[in-house]
Length: 434
Ligand SMILES: NC(=O)C1=CN([C@@H]2O[C@H](COP(=O)(O)OP(=O)(O)OC[C@H]3O[C@@H](n4cnc5c(N)ncnc54)[C@H](OP(=O)(O)O)[C@@H]3O)[C@@H](O)[C@H]2O)C=CC1
Ligand SMILES: N[C@@H](CC=O)C(=O)O
Image 1 (cartoon, rainbow, N blue to C red):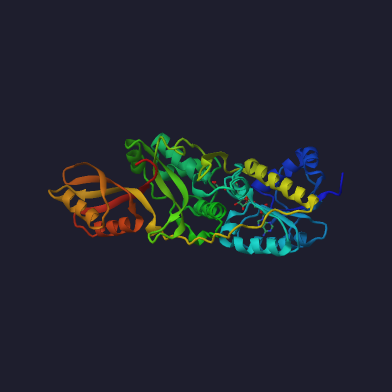
Image 2: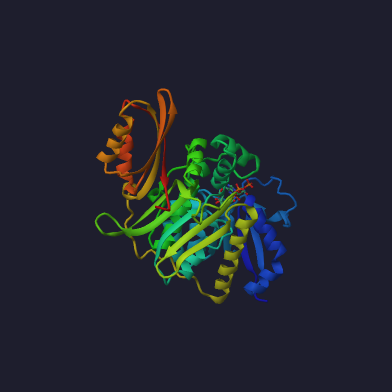
């Protein structure tokens, strides 16, 4: 056996602890697969005294000096499972510039400032791997950045957040409201103490940015992604979706194609959407993730599995550790970031989709004509209208044909000003089907 590959582990929480366990349990196999044993050089944490169960590791390896650990000469590979922008960015830029290989699960940092990491990797001639940052255990980023590099990806549609998928699946199965389903997700340990990043769509938007960057060879950041969370999805929306043979999912949608002027461009968005039960993503339940990729030559591909949790995420981290360690031994590095296409990003207003609009209206003669007139003025064509209600109160549920988002936004704005419209209960996009 050759000299060991020395690894600095930054973070030893949900994911980090499973990385330690797998490194220990699979030490012999990993050494055989890599061609050299992997040794932990140190583990950086925030609180030295924290109880970490019966981790199979020498307590003397723990430190609170992450930067000092990264800079050590005996460290070859830095594995970052801390999260957040700083100080993680400083540590990883330092490691990459010094030629150390980096494996990270930090989607927030990659989406916020992936450029800093890719530039540092290019500068230091180092590997930057981040399979665990999107969809946990699912091998997804390597297929996008290697296997499909001979093809043109046209669209990526995914369920990439486990917590929100659990909540929406529970709402669909039991008729529960959002708050009740979130409580269940928290009790089961899916949702974090502060679930904002999940339920407001920030986590999915970061993953969408990473997927779009790889799929379209264009740097896409978190700020380029249109984002809506699931906090406004109601039990009534779910019931209405069911009535239409649909369910509601938080989707990440990244697509390429010509914009209104014919220029090739991309669109990246995250929002709840109704999808028909026949859609490949409709049956993805519980906290599972799935990503549906469409490419010109390959056609349709579906990736499915566990997108969150310590062990599934650690599986992806370890896969990257094997890859970068092999590269080090062979004295090669993976191809650098591919952002040559540099496609412009379309504003959300140009995204074309169908809509499900639910309105509380006064049940008077002419209400339907008045509402339909607003849609017509903005060139949003109505596909179906359903009316229910009693006495003076009625609910109108309108589903449109395909229309640009800007036209729908203008329609909703004008509807709000109509006397007969008491409130706009919900506006949901409808994806798939026709
Ligand atoms: N959990 C999941 O299912 C998934 C997580 N990820 C990503 O993996 C990363 C880690 O997530 P997760 O394990 O859940 O996070 P945790 O909060 O469970 O763990 C974070 C770890 O980082 C340590 N840490 C925090 N701040 C510092 C600091 N300033 N210096 C040194 N150590 C620090 C903590 O130390 P201490 O233990 O002392 O508090 C802890 O060990 C994140 O980027 C996350 O987005 C990706 C996919 C799935
Ligand atoms: N909070 C995330 C964890 C993985 O990225 C999720 O729920 O999917």
